[in-house]
Structures are given as structure tokens and as C-alpha cells.
Image 1 (cartoon, rainbow, N blue to C red):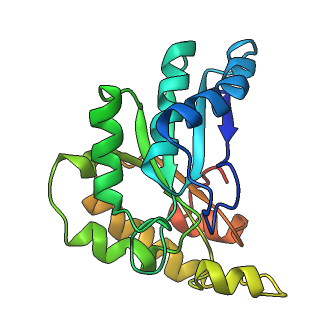
Image 2 (cartoon, rainbow, N blue to C red):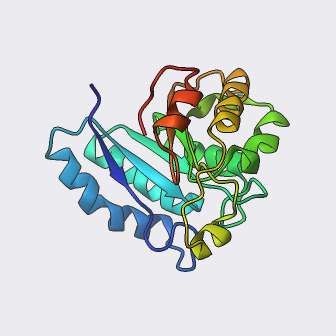
Length: 198
């Protein structure tokens, strides 16, 4: 069993307004990475990353602590991160700036309809670096979800179908789960009847 310590972004993961430099991000996240280092945690995961510099800083903090790290980005409905950076660009930049230190990358807190076109229309080794999906149940934008007064459960069957289609393109996909609005029904559909973690 892998024990994973999760890190979130500094500030609003849906609407980043206070961007850190790589050095600032490394310093900011080093304390929590260091705490995980002193526990039974096997690795750390940076969830809902919105721009490359913070992800790079976390990867460097993890490397300094000798902790494996996974980097998970969120995207808007156009397939780009909230910063406007492309998913491909962020993955390639983080790898280049850290010597390919992250164990793998993931996408979380976005519905597959927000990033499917980006994935299906792309080629290149960066796609093989994506090992995990933790999608939202809802196809609403981050702005719409922020304003919503009720949980949008989306369509579990459609979400499962999207995961299976993406698995054909993302050849190393082996971490499947759910983010906002998902429950056991969505997870069951993702695995075609087999359960994965949320």
C-alpha cells in the first residue's frame, strides 16, 4: 500500500491571482514536504496545480527531501490551466526544469470534456507522463462550480465512458479516481465495475 501525502496549491485552486516564483514555491512548500518526510508517507502529490512555477517548486522541494512526487494539474473548459499555460507546456517545462524528477503527472478537478480534445489531438512523449485522472463529476466550469448552491453529480455512465476512451490514448494511465461531485457510482463506472480510489 502506498501512503501518499497530498499538497494543495497556495491560494485559490480555481482562480490563481498571486503567482509565486519557482524559488518562492520551493520555500513555501518545503515545510509540508519536510513534515511528510518525517512520517510513514511514501510520496507526495501536488493536487490542482494551476501554473508551472508552483509545480516546479514543489518538485524541487520533494527532490531535496528525497520524496517521490506526482504533479496533478487542473484545466479550464478550454483545456488550458487557469494561468493560461497549456497542459503540454506545463508538463514539459516541469520535466525540463527538474530533470524529469516527478514520478508522473495527473489531471484533476476538471471534467473530461474540458481536456479530451487536448489529449486526443496531441502526440508526443509528454502524453506518456500522464498516469492519473481524478475528474470532476460535473462538466461545469470552475466559475460555475464556485457559484453553484447544489452539488452537480453529472452523469456517472458518461464519465466512465470518457475514462475508458482516454485510457486508449494515455498508455500509462493507472491511477483512476474522482474529484468534485464523484462518489462510488462514478468510480464503479470508471473501472467498468472494478473499484478504484477517490
